[in-house]
Amino acid sequence: AYDDWCIAQFAKLLNKPAEYTEFIRRAQYWKNVFDSESGFMKARSNGNWWKPFDPTEVNNNFTEANSWQYTFYVPQDVETLIKAYGGTTAFQKKLDELFSTTQGLSGRGQVDITGLIGQYAHGNEPSHHMAYLYNFVNQPSDTQRIVREILTTLYSNAPDGVSGNEDCGQMSAWYVFSSLGFYPVTPGSNQYIIGSPLFEKATINLENSKQFTVQANGISKENFYIKSAKLNGKVLD
Image (cartoon, rainbow, N blue to C red; front, side, top):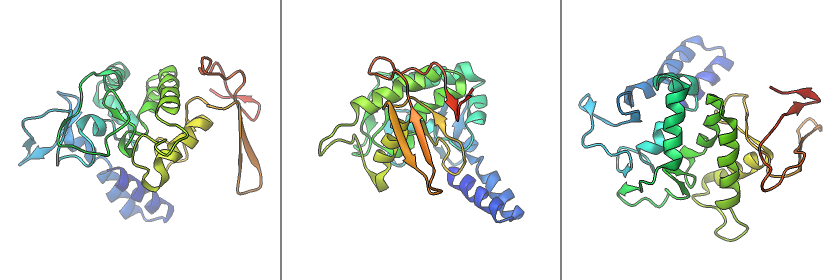
């Protein structure tokens, strides 16, 4: 569904309305596997829900993950996913459970599912945007806390310094973005969601020869919550 959303954006740029309409419709197909009663994405069999269901189980219904790790994978339409839970309070509760559950993995062995915080699996790409979802329910401090935990506990300067599969450099890309203080929850859009910078100052050299500098005043191991922010000197809400 996310891939189809990306195709729809490309079709829009190419001024192909028919293709855009088709793929933006398909981008909503995640709703076909969302079970509102349980609050999980679930496999179907002959039109019915696959049984028995265990959200911790790793099986052939999910690619390198389980239901916990795909339930929050609607980066192209976070707002509608929140509505599917009945609003921000219920969604936040489910998100809290993702990061805090003491349930372990079950089912078959899967080497890609590593770097676990609750059922959040930082070692594999489907989870990588999830810490930033707290911003969508007006709880940015939780995003900042979890992102800082991931940056400082699941990476190290060593041969095994990434906690999972470095597919196409994604584990490192998450670190670079998050250490700068922002992340593309929906790649293919022009939105970057704010986290918390790891460094006091970092500068990106842009293609137009300009520079984008992130300055985090007073940042430290203990002091990483953002009190306020400015962009080009103007207050950023």
